[in-house]
Image (cartoon, rainbow, N blue to C red):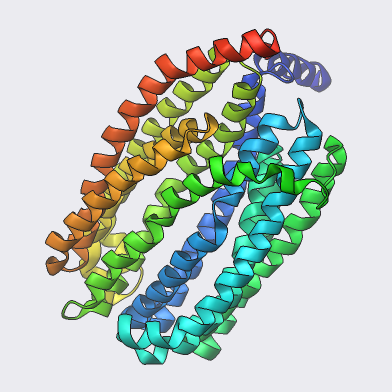
Length: 461
């Protein structure tokens, strides 16, 4: 009887999610991505609370400023090569595996070289940054430790992007969970022994574990897909760096420096590092609120790129609008409880954080707005219209700088408000552009591709 019931359920599953269909691919990718990201984000939040209690409000603010500075350099080092690997591996792994392998190799080698160069530059700049910009010379040693984190994270980002291009979300989830489990004891021990320096070093060690695991997973996926990675022929693919990687990099590169400018404006206010501590704690929950939408975006990008490469306009639109609807529902459903419980959540970080409820509530609103941008932005990337994406990001940057200059005099709540205002402006501009591109430009381009390359071969089930 049990076997009969199981057989009935399996038959229903197969009918609802036919193998290879868009629904099956999206469901499988979303399940594994949410499972992996959910566990890792939950552990990260728990670790952040422990670290905040050990370091105190000001020390936690110092750690936030160090990681923000490392992140700014990381954007320059990464060159958006993870996104490049995702798009082109997804688009070409079936139709042109040889070229997919060349672009993958180009992405990984460029990431390694850029990561090494950026780490050396960061090492040299650390004393001047800590003394003249951060107004905290004692943070120079923590910034130097960030060089290792910068180098490892750059290569790891390219590897994760390539795995997403293969739609290997189960492998990505497995790596995320193992890395998160290893992070807990590493961070607790490191912070207890060395404070802020220990926290940065612990992050570098945990990132190295993830780098090794991702390397093994990527080799397995390449073998299974029959894709060879070597340096032979990668010079022929250098135009990809100009057409896609460079504008993608420029669009993303401004995010780290622009937000860093906002953080710098905040820490140079009276009681600035204490206010930065509040913002850093609230930012942990902004990241947590955005994790499911970012997962959906990570699933949508390879699917949209694959459907674009296979000339399936109907399937493309279906995946895009389904993800937009899901993200909006999740953003509202998760954001409201965080806003309601913001005071209690901030109190969990310690008595010094108890008055940070309004900061968290404002950051939750900003996160809800940015969630929709995560999915809408994947459409621009999948169509390869990255120079247009760069111009749209300039609109966001201008809105954020203006808002931060006006509001940071009010402390952490002012910078949180600057995030909310700038994301609202960005959502309106990006949303309008994407709808026009999808309804007018994309159909024309796909019709031209069909005339050159043949009829649509994708399934829209």
